[in-house]
Each structure stands twice: as structure tokens, then as C-alpha cells.
Amino acid sequence: MSLNFLDGQPFATGSVGYSYRPATERETVSRLIVQVEIEGVMTEAIIDTGGVFLICPPKIANRMQLDENDSLGEDIVGVRGSDVRGRLYRMNLKLLAEEGQSLTLEVTALIPRDTREEHWVSELPCFLGLHGCLERLRFAVDPYTETFYFGPIS
Amino acid sequence: MQAVQFCSSTSSTTCEEFAFGDKPLSSETQIRITAEVEAKVSIQESLKVLKAMTHQNVLGALQESERLLDFFRSFNPEPLLAPFQKDLSRLTTLFFHRSLPETLRSFFDDFLLAFLEEVAEAEDEAAFLFIGKAIDWSGRTAEEFVRGIKLALKAGALLFARELSSEGVKRYPDHRELQKSARVLAQPKVIRSDLPPVPSVKANREWLKEHAKDYRGRWIALRNGELKEDANSFDELVEKVGDTQGILLTKV
Image (cartoon, rainbow over all chains, first blue to last red; front, side, top):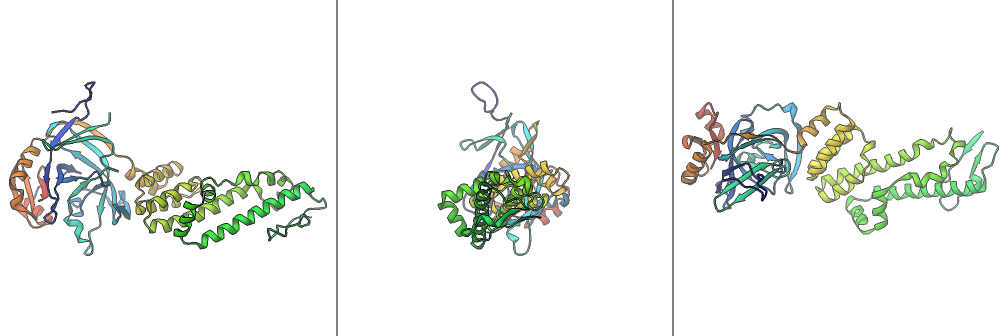
């Protein structure tokens, strides 16, 4: 089912059901998790409108054909008051539709550094933040049907 | 011979300290010069004091003092020097008046850039934005833009990092690092919005709803709603699966 404005113009052009469950075995709070394709790798990602960038764990990023020369050098990025050391890339993110149309967009992606000291990053799933990722999309959530609606700003 | 001597004291400056060859300056001009020299010395002394302060108490001062706040926001040496410049046509050999406003502005921005480093280190985004926006970036080098972008990222001032990279690449279009920054930090852009739906997504989701609880903490590979493999780690899973094209790889 699509979402339209009163004049019939589409608000969203695609929709996908989301899983509502904790992201890791240590978490107890459920998250909105959707299936996505990042640089050709099909995985799940948490919709995190309070977050920034597409955050992609290094293990998954290793499956992608990324050129380190195209990234910004290893920077410290302030994410929600915490320092995350990692590389910033431009990546293709595909939102997979169950109904309507799927959508591909170029986003800013942060791949956190994976070291012995920061091994926790491998435990993270992908995150779709607002700034640098979802900020130029229309989107809506229907908790009743557990559906995530999305569409371009036309 | 022409000679100009600046006073070192703001209170004891006298008109006799200024001369121009054989022709003494008019008393009106001398008074103007005296006033401007006093202002210049006063600013330099103020900046020395500011430089010696830590960023916390400078920020406190900024927030408390409207006058200082206005000074930071709108510092422009041109009006300050305008009356002085009126007489500078006679003093060009010893007093390079054309570069003085730029020098003052540059000196001021150097101070703010150093200040920016400290504020970024403290991860104070609000203070970072305040200082970052007070800097006149038009006179800054490509390397200073790159440094500013890195500091903005560290401070969590992500929108400012984007603005700075966009501005930087406009000023230095051939600078490789600024090109990269502008591309990576640019607004997200929709490439295609007319792609077909993916039927396996629903099947995978239904499997997850039914079985995810049985595989908590495990990495799994699903194809069209069927479990292909499960493993303790992502690397182990990929090794088991082989070709991962069209397969959902996730941890539950």
C-alpha cells in the first residue's frame, strides 16, 4: 500500500516490513531493523534517526570493493558524544522494497576501526542515521503493520 | 628622510613622535594617528590577554560580554583604520597600509584557528560552531580548510564539516583532499527510485520473525526465506556460504 499526499502525489514510493527486535543478544530494547543492500552486500540495518551517517561494521565492509584512497583518512568522528575512529566513504545504499519501488542513494558511510582495543565494533550491526544518510528521503513508520515507507524528495 | 615612529604607550603618546620628512604632519592628522595607534596597541594587548586564557574562560567571557561577543562576530579593521588611511598616501614606503587590515584579520583568524583546535579537543560542538563561524575562511589556505574539516568531524559539527568542505573545494578546486571531503561529506543523493521490489525480503523477514530467537547471537545466511548457514562469526559464515550474491547476511 502506498502513501500519498491529499493531491494524489506520492509521499512514499516503496515500503518494506521491518523486524522489531533487539539488535544484539546483549540488548533488551527492540529496534527497527530493515533489510538493505550496501555496495552489493545484502544485510540488515537499524533505522536510527538520532544517529549520523550509514555506519557499517568493518567485517561487512571487507566484502565490498572499496578503495581506501577514496576515503577520508582515519578521522575521529564525534557520534552521539562518543569518539569513533574510522574512515568515511561515499557508498551506495539500496533500500529494498517489498511493495512499490526500491531506491538507491549515495550516502556518507563511516567504517569504524576494528582493533583489539575496539573489538566491539564487530558486534555492531549497520545503522542508518539521519545526517548523511536518510536526511534527503521522505520516510514514515507504521508500527501497526510494522512497515517502513520511503521515497525520494521529488 | 621620511620617518614614522609608533608610540609604545597608550597614555603618553604625543604628536611630536610623528613626522614626515621635513614636513610636520598637521595637528589634526597627528591626533588621528595617535588615536589609531592607541586603538591598535589596545587591541594587541587584549589579544595577548585572550591568548593566555584557557578556552573555557574565554568562552565564559564571550558568553557574558556582549561587547566582546560583537567584537568577535563582526571584527572588521577597515572602519577602525579608515581615518588613518586618509593620510597614508604620504607614508607608503614605511607603512604598507594596504596589507594592514588583512594582517590584522589574519592575525585574528590565526588566533581563532588555534582556539578552534582546543574547542574541538574538548568536543564542545556549540563552542566549535561559534568559533568556526567567526573565522573568515576566505583568507585561509587549502590545508587550513582540511584541518578545519577534521576538527569539525571530531567536534561532532558534521553540518559545518560539510559546509567547510563545500566551500573549500570551491576555493581550491584542484586540491585532492578537499575534492574527496566534498564528495564524501556531500548531502545524500538519490540515484534511482524506480527499481523493482525484491520478493525475497518478505520471505527472509518472515523466517526471522519465526526463528530469530532460536539463533540469538549467531550469524545467519538466508536465501528466499531459507536458512543456508549459521556461524559464530561473520568470517566463518562467509567461508561456509561461498558466493554471497543475493544472500542476506546478518546477526540475530
